[in-house]
Length: 411
Ligand SMILES: [Zn+2]
Image (cartoon, rainbow, N blue to C red; front, side, top):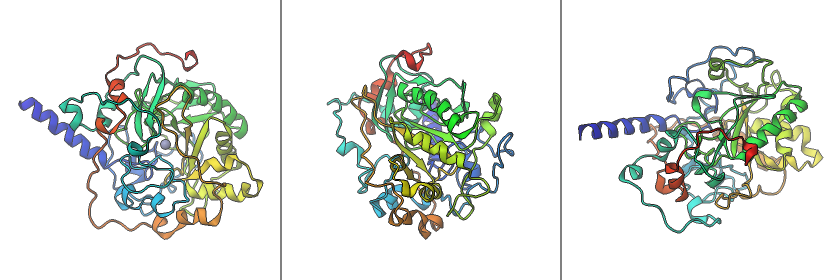
């Protein structure tokens, strides 16, 4: 009995701690919450303030987002003032869509459970008492290996899981995976194959040695204890604005180096001292790939692309959409793969390239650039439980592990 209480206490302490650190919108996916958003708690001892970047371009201490700009979650809780509700034309990507989307969402953030167009198994598997009460993120984070079985992305980007995930090797000819301690270099085989294809294309387009890859998904996908609301079904990946150095980084360097923030301190423009044409080529190359559904970048970066490309009517520009954060990495989201009938599609972007003044205005409004601090401390948001996820995710959680490392190409 006593042991049980202790366990429950530990879990709830963990839960409260982690809910303070959520949300890639405000913190940088790959850099420690403590650096990018002072009010957030660092969830893990591995995430510490960083030393100056080792071999990086002027990796900006100064470019670390000012607290007023990278509002901590309580200042713009997604379920209260999420941009979708305010600016329906702005494609709110699901990167940070509150998983339990209760408020009327834009066309891009439909309430997942209600409007899911994809067929789901009719019955929910029985949940144990423990699973009912525990946030699903802890259950998924504790799974260190993928399931056996055919690869399948299940559910929605911010509310689902991954069967038969495959691991992206931490080093490749044109890539290195960062933050290895997180064990998030897993994805649907299409994501892994995309990265293997994209890395050399990006290297060629930019003149870089290759790319640095941040978070993908956990071995079985699912909600993450910190850092993102999406990245749950093995089709999302963050890729840094920083060339891969011409050498293999140590494990420690991969924990400590930060990506390069391209946005100026006023958040209205890219920083002209840091931004280069290679950054544009990098984004363009990602958006040009047919399997890519969205590329999310900071609004100042989207604005710069509009200045460069707005008149050219490139269809790839439609996929590049502004979102909070994303000043030091792009977030690439793939379309639902053909082998995944329970993967729920993200509705298409509203027409156009998103460069019209009305499309961008919201992102440069005072409330986004200078959000007012909330008078009260944030109430921790309850995480998703297993009951919030597609029923098949229960099976994913309990399925036998695959211990051999299957290459994505074997699928
Ligand atoms: Zn991301």
